[in-house]
Length: 106
Image 1 (cartoon, one colour):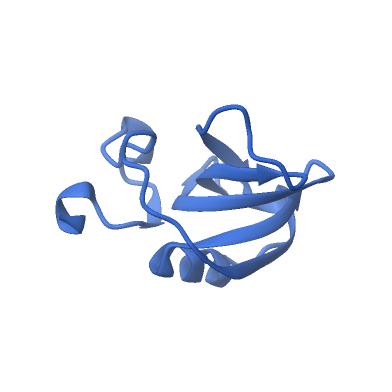
Image 2 (cartoon, rainbow, N blue to C red):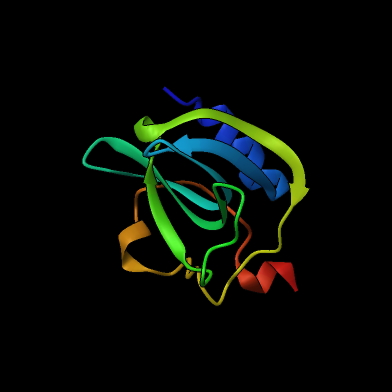
């Protein structure tokens, strides 16, 4: 199982993660770590899948238990507040750690 500490580090430093998810190598920009049904999830933007950029950038949900070979890499990302909305109701009361809110980044 992926250590939440690795996820905390990536979110706090706004650094990308490399991981294997559904047998594919992905580069993720994690924005938030939260719980749902007693399981941990991250919402992250997929930067690369199998070494190639996706057709469009979008926020995806990844179950921590499904992420393997996770590592923080030395590549930073900008918070994508257009894709990620910290006020989304699904995060209310279950957020463990998240990037700084948009107003704090200005």
